[in-house]
Amino acid sequence: MKVAWALVAGSIAFYGCASKKYGDEKLDTKLETSDKKTSDKFGFDKERNLVLQEKTAATDELITQTHVNEELQSKLQHEFQQLKRCRMDLADVRLGGTGEMAPLPEIDGIKNDPSFKETVGVDESGELVFIRQEKFEDKLKGEKSAEKTIRRLTKVVVNNREQCELRMRKARVEKGLPAERTQAVTRYEGGQVIIIQPAERNLDDAFQFANQAKQK
Image 1 (cartoon, rainbow, N blue to C red):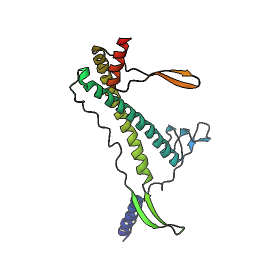
Image 2 (image 1 turned 90 degrees about the horizontal axis):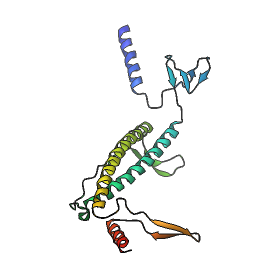
Image 3 (image 1 turned 45 degrees about the vertical axis):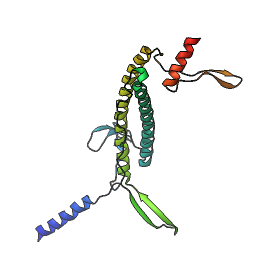
């Protein structure tokens, strides 16, 4: 009988641990320093490991991570568009291209589709509402994973862009164009910006500007 009760107690303990939810764990964030005072940044943990600790509100961590990813995503899109423009110019027959643009790196699918719990019901005020919930832990892990992916893809795109621009500068010079795209020339007059020479938008502009320069 004692053995049976021991098995039952063990089963209860096992299932109790298995059913623990994210956020149930109580964290002791106090660290012991050399002078026995406590600190939340540097000191010894319970196992006497010397650690550096950062403590922030969970929502702040998620908001910060989301902002970081938005900035990284913006940079990735900018680099991607620059690479696309370069390869389109390099493919132009006027620069010795074949008329077909080289394939671009794949930058879609950075984030997995989130798993939402959706419910329609009446809230505390009696209003009919639609509720969409996503587990906080899944959201934070997804954002941190996305950061690594965005940084990796950005390196790939930047490397491709730099190699493309090296070839494009060589091709432009061989066809009588300046190596770099023509930038806008402006002056400030009477409180307004006057455009003297517009920026080069495409290869049509590049050849037009080159012909105008020869005629001067």
